[in-house]
Image 1 (cartoon, helix red, strand yellow):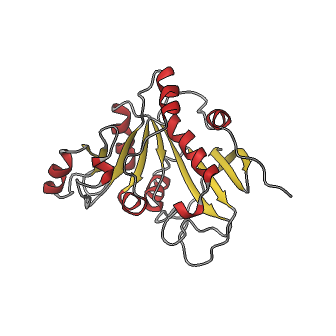
Image 2 (cartoon, rainbow, N blue to C red):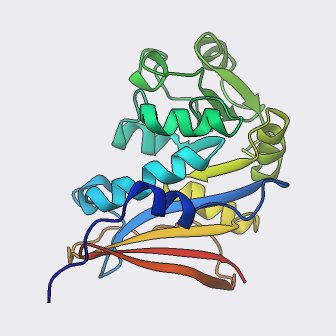
Image 3 (cartoon, rainbow, N blue to C red):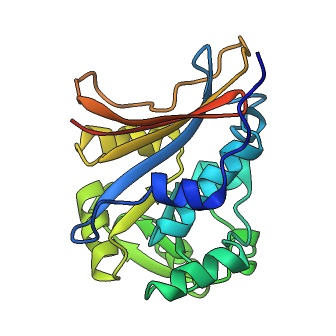
Length: 239
């Protein structure tokens, strides 16, 4: 049986479009193997393919801000994140800035201000932290990013989303990592989960897409299951 052909950009933009833009919300985007691993050799990128990357670009085009954890920035890069020229024009035609903003969540602020995340950024990045984070590191990062203090001893996910909304960044695309997903899940702030099911079996001891959250049930409903080559693009929303 032959694999289905790649999905075109217009279909992806329509498939991942929000029903409205009247409220803040959080969309998670992850890739995982058939046997449940979120990483291959310590990175998620090895599990995806061109179809997964096409879907990710569509979701970035639709987002106000791409949110990632500090560990994901270090593991996956994220220097100079930008949508294509065609997608930037699509955004402008709908009254949005050319590029989404990018925000990194960090409690310890163990990020180098010279990292490509900051130096290659196409729009000024954001750093989300808390009041107890090291003051010297906060000052250093404030030179290259807008720093949002959300919480006293730890990052408060609800306060973070309120702070992003005040920056007109209500539609949040969160690309990990698993501990950030876990904190949003614990706070019951996950509106959608988009999962690229990779046609791979990897074994090993790779983690799940969400980690650190207490056990609880969050019912979701299937919005779509799109075959794309041998990969399947799954979209779930709050039930």
